[in-house]
Image (cartoon, rainbow, N blue to C red; front, side):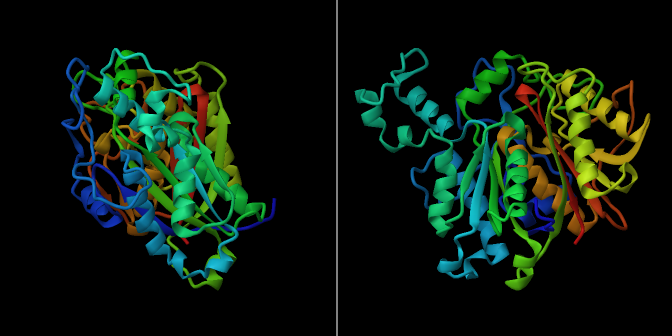
Length: 409
């Protein structure tokens, strides 16, 4: 691969704690929670009726109006405008790409449609020639995850290759890594990288049946944690080759200095108890960034609030930072729930907000830290002298692990 510096020139976010970067910054400063009662769907019978819901979604032009597309397009629009990407002439957009990470994408909207129209017990016929599919029109045709990437490319006339990552909860973090690789290999000059997942019956029922959803308050990184809550939203980053960004006089918010991806090859849903996958991903990111653990000023944890996941991540940090994990850590999921495939991109945006503003985001609702570990948990937003390097972790089903390091430019 070519030795290219990767920079971030645009940020966009549409989430339960804010519908743009400035609103999210204010929510972080105020240690504000986005967890609310879910009124958009029937949640009777679930372990919990709360989640990180985006209320009153702004209308924006999409191919089908599905919730995933609305969330995505709002975040992308903010990032594209911030980066001044549209100032690039149409003829010069041949090497501007799109990379989207998601867990359910448009498929969630299809399931919503079936539930609303036919009820939970209706047999679903996925034969493309069935009358059911003909009735559903665009909803059926937007099940392929690649169409989320296509819609973004089509909207802004971006002619570079598009890609989709569906590696569960690490999906959009993986999309960022894939996008960086496209730039390093000279297949793209810039990439619009997005993560999106809407709240749907599919995800709520799935995590409820796994008994991974808490019955009480969401308490990530707490001794008495009992599970996660589902969130939704979208995050977008415009990442570019530094030379390309400087040449077009683009604003530069941060650098993507290191990436690490791995798989722990252990279990479909449960992380490896010795955290081997997470350790490998973090170590790769540090090595690529040419940094040592002591250089990291803040870690945005994966931190879901489940028994196994939070412990696994602390085991990984102990393996790298030692028994006394002095680096400040917190989980954005404590503010908005687990946004699944969107989490990597949303938390990347929050990590860059931390860098730009020298801010340590909070980990809400902790009353007692996990007893077996000594870690520096940020429980209330803290302003510090300088944040130079931030590590953001995303771990998903199937053993997928991704770690990203963002650095001050």
